[in-house]
Length: 202
Image (tube, rainbow, N blue to C red; front, top):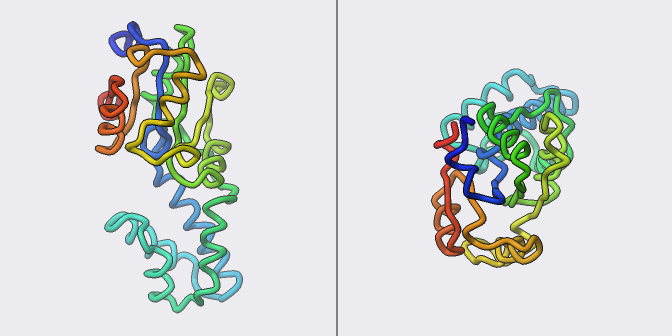
């Protein structure tokens, strides 16, 4: 069993979403593509040039203020920011989002071992639900229990995991949390549960 060392002593696993289950850029770059197509249709600005700029900007600086930078570059009216934000919440993607292959294999082994999988998802719930619906789960979706950290006291406060433990009659040493940020690691430390950075699986 490839992941036995991580699975054998635990009853449940708590994972994040973005850059833990799948690469977040796979979602954002498709949103940018749809936005560029929309702007070409409404403003007759070349979509390919917008997409190329947004991809380059994202690669260099991430998604922060990317609408504003693109609007300045192409003289896109501010009114379209609402459309840009709504696309993040309700975009129907051209392509399914794919789990990291190693994460897929890990979750399949967890299911075979009849252990529990929880998603504790950061970010705006409507947007995150849209991502979850468009992930290719390979049948794993029926084994997931999903919680949104925004519905609790923000991290690094421990209310969210304490709620999960209480609801599912679990102890702290039953849990392995898997994340990808220093905040995730500090969060697990505050709770007192074991932590694994996703890079160890990938």
